[in-house]
Image (tube, rainbow, N blue to C red):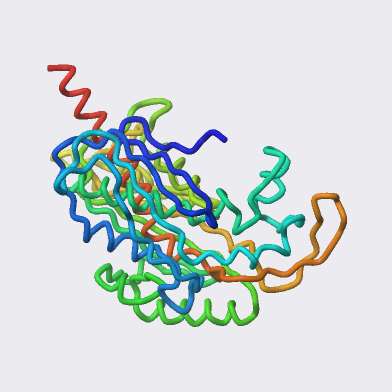
Length: 357
């Protein structure tokens, strides 16, 4: 199986399955001399871990990270940083009923046809549990990019959407509610909606928005390595993601050029920011902002028709512990992937400047 690594300079390679002994990764390209804040890494893991509230999966995993290499006396050495996260609360029997049955809209069918076998326990390698490894790498990337502020939040759950033009977003309240919505009143509505969906044995999708501040001018490469293209790839690699838009996105298609152009101020800043902080694939110093669309979780606690590996038509119903809506736990994952992209381009810029001197 290829495709387990992300990045070109600051890279992360992940391994492991949802119900295996452990998951983990190797971070390569992290510069030497970075003093790590392990409490900050732990805090990021706590934001993603299961069982943190009544509206997420009740699988209980501490998600404690054990670092194996690349760190000496709390400081990176410049060598590969290896780490593992033990799986301590597997209930593989919850998946025995789908050993030979394909769950609709899951990776069961495609994995089986591509590889000739599949780990049916929680989806194995296709499980969103793999994203815990990304959060570890992203937490370190954030510390490397200490001047850059990355903030993601839930802006939509099903039909409930923030009206960003007229609502004052309170970023300091994001972690004060289980939905991670920066509008306290909307957060309550979203939480109640998710709880109602769960009672129905159903699931719902949503939107995670992200704002990145203090991005230096010049990150990103023309043509095939545009900054927004790399961000798009990063976000679309996250489980359950169905869409990515940055800047004005699809709403920009309804505007005229005279309305959409970001007119310059004398200092090079712009009066508007429909470009979303990226022009020509390169950061222009303005805030980068984008939206990531997540589909409803595919596992339902309702009966659905499906087929077996032999093509027999059967009926199945989900069992076990699953998120009714993934977006609350996806917030730190979106931030982590954004940090990995920015770390890659930030290091590339440093290398380019050194080679030109």
